[in-house]
Amino acid sequence: MTTVANDIFENLLKNSENNIPAVDEVVRASIIQISKKEARFNLPGFRTGIIRGREIMRDPRFVSTLKVGDEVNVRVLDLDNETGEAELGFADFGENRAWEKLNELRDSGEIIEVAVSDANKGGLIITLENIAGFMPVSQLRPENYPRVSGGDKNKILEKLKSLVGKKMKVKILTADPEENKLIFSEKVVWEDEFKGEVAKYKAGDVIEGQISALTDFGAFIKFDNMEGLIHISEIVWQRLNHPADVLKVGETVKAKILEVAGSKIFLSIKRLTEDPWKNIGDKFKVGDVVKGKVVKVSPFGFIVELTPEIFGLAHISELSDEQVTNPSKIAALGDTLEFKIVSVEPDYHKLNLSLKALKEKTEEQRNTETEKRENIETEEQRNPVGEQAPYGAGTETEKQRNIETEKRENIGTEKSLSSDEIGAGTPVPRPQAGMAVPRLSAGMAAEGLATEGLATEGLGAEEQRNKETEEQPVAPPVSPESDEGEKTE
Image 1 (cartoon, rainbow, N blue to C red):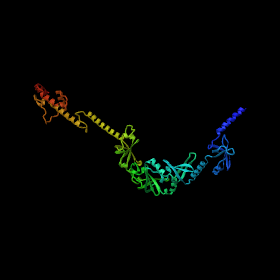
Image 2 (image 1 turned 180 degrees about the horizontal axis):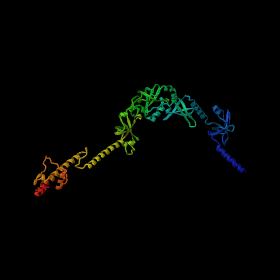
Image 3 (image 1 turned 180 degrees about the vertical axis):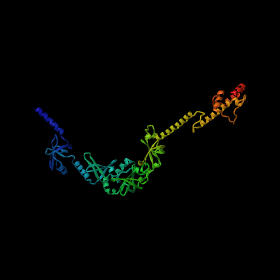
Image 4 (image 1 turned 30 degrees about the vertical axis):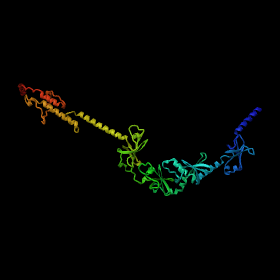
């Protein structure tokens, strides 16, 4: 029995030792008794703890919200006070109260003045009620916004650092203790101040002001204590690499208001001039072949300048009938090429170009020429040498063939002249230079060719044939019997 009791006591002692908190340790404890002057807590596995006196009087309003059973984070100040209890204090008393106050300021929309304690590349660090908060660059008022050409982060940080120590009027946008997030805004205060001023302007109004800053994405212009943005695409009609190419800080310009969105005013300079795309159909039509300069090579194709105001897109799929993965292998920046216009959309300021369609046209022309040649060869086969060719088919080759045919016919006529026509024993005369040779009828020519065995030969053998004719013996005179026979018949 004694052994069992000792074991139980030892286990209880071990568990008790494991639950003994250390001084300055924060533990979770539940309230077992509370009044305006003191509050007692149960420290599990250890003993009762107490918060009293000055500690509980720091914020009576906070204590008045507590009740028996609530769990609160407490900090151990002493493990054993004069009454044998643990002396405790509220661990997050000050922080809880601070978040309560911050939420009250957020809900009321009260304007508060704060000092900038630090800065990073994203914005400003501001501490309020011992809670560190943040104000993003986007929440700065226009005059404090770091406008840096090229978006150089180091220069942005340099401008933000110059605001450290400066006092600003802000409002709290977010106060979330669970996320430990405290966000301030200076811009909403500025918007409230100029709300009446902004309401004076509407889309379509034309204003005059000075360029206050230039950035990669556009230009800022100040007018009548207001400031608006001219996006880079709204400065001029032609393609622009940077606003500084056509504008400079301090320059006075006129601009048209495109939109008023809250405190933001969006403007345009180019809308005060005529849109070059309005009459683009007079210059460029689908199917036209045009020359253009490649002003940008990108993964999706070429940006091509046709005129200083008109630019077209040659998509990567229109660069070749073969697959293209790298447009720079087709053309380089600055190259001037011929393109075919495949679509024009004036309302959307879009003009699409194609190299592939241009090559297809060339191939079509080649096919047409091939077809013409095949037609000529077919016609020649239908009209052999010596036959009358159809009207319009008299090419140089055909004319030459007709001449050769005529010469061969003349030779045949010479050989087929009979003795009845030129006299017995008379040699067959040869045609002299310049002498017209009589043409034989088809029947006579056939009879002569059959008698003499004359075959159609090429003009290249004409001289040889003449020589052979001279060497042949003169045909003997026809006998009287034959002659009389013919006469009798």
